[in-house]
Amino acid sequence: MGKIWLPAENQFISRDGLLLRLASHPLLLLGEKHDNPDHHRLRLELLKDLISPDSNSLLVLEMMTRDQQPAIERLTGTSLPTESDSLVSQLAWDTDGWPWQFYGPAVMLAFERDVQLRAGNINTGDVMQIYQDDTPHNSQPLNTEQIAQLERDIDSSHCGMLPSSQFPAMVRVQQTRDQQMSTALLPGDDVFDQRILLAGNYHIRHDLGVPNYLSQRPLSVAFLEVDPEYTAPAPYSQAFSETLPYDVIWFTPALRQNDYCADMRATQAR
Image 1 (tube, one colour):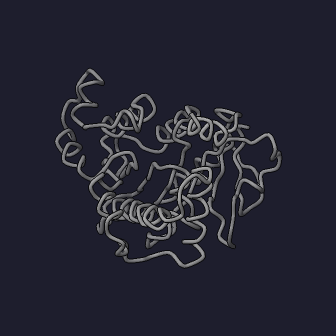
Image 2 (image 1 turned 90 degrees about the vertical axis):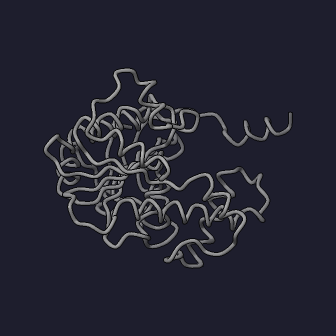
């Protein structure tokens, strides 16, 4: 726990060494497990070192949908509200899905340091349309092997409790989200020295996520919880193909050790 691993190089690296690599790379994907406070704290500390008031950076958030972009534009360059509740309201922030105490500091940092902030996710209406329409919603679909792995992961993450008939729509939603984030990262201009995406660990995977829709290779940093059953770093790469999912893995303590699926099945049985 607390160590930083480079899967392709099969070695650990110091935080200072990692920071040097991040600072020199134009496209960064920084992951998280959404409910782990350590991931948010460690990532925020990296952001503070990476972006400065005179940096020309773009910060894209999975946690904001594109219909929130006008609110971001209205607040950019203005004096921010002193009360966080006011900022949350003006941004129409989804506090149920994305607790402000986790994400607010990164948002505030972007505004304070004059970093361009961009919403990276699709709207609820987009999701509903994707479920109703089985037409592919992306111009660069994954291959058959990748789609099959997405379906397996969806099944596993829902503890085998979802009917397989829902898998295709959920895969389309996942793909469309990843493509939307890639579009937000690379809007067609070349004015940013560095572009950074904050998203869940799964979205930043080279083998299955956002990198598949980008025209240039990003550097992907995952924050992963340590499993007591795996005491060596190699199994955490989670590779199902020759493509390693992450460039960097930062190991942290696990938030919980109990069986999530057992809890979920118990809830369903009530």
